[in-house]
Length: 193
Image (cartoon, rainbow, N blue to C red; front, side, top):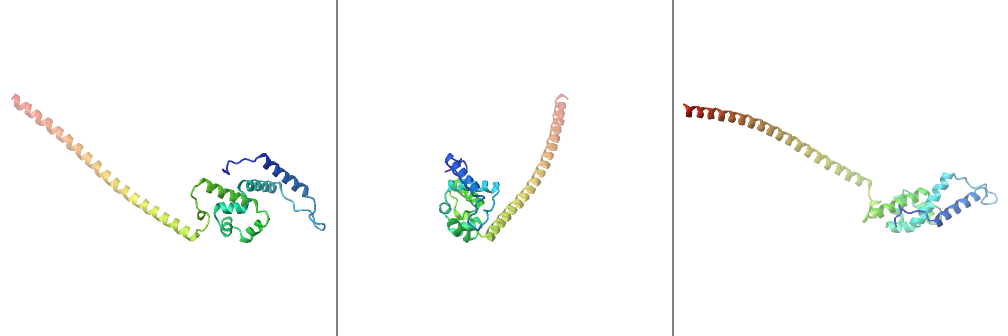
């Protein structure tokens, strides 16, 4: 299933609209007798939550996504940069924040678009090891750059030597041409004379 090109079906659209209508109706109702009205949600927050619901319908629940990514619950928490207690709360029914669903959608899309991508791509890399690998690659590129620079300097020297040799050969060719003309003129003069 291609998550990037997925469009909202009429059923999903109706489900989202119904959920938003219900939340708006419940907005002024107290949850319990002695409790004040529900916390207000901005229209933007409700929009994000509706988007999160659509994404959840596309990619499945948290456990489905975890299984498809091939990660343990602990690794999922590392991937999402959340405390494991949050994962536990979400599995028990509390809604994860919308940005969590968006991140999961991105991870699923990346895994879909890059065949053979392992879960270790997402987590399991020690930042110090990653930094050392990057520095090693940088040093290697820097060494290659220095070698190329030295080769460039050597080639420039060879080009100058060749240019000098070409000039010397031109002078020699001109002198040889003049000498040939002089000898030819002397030979013609000797034949006539």
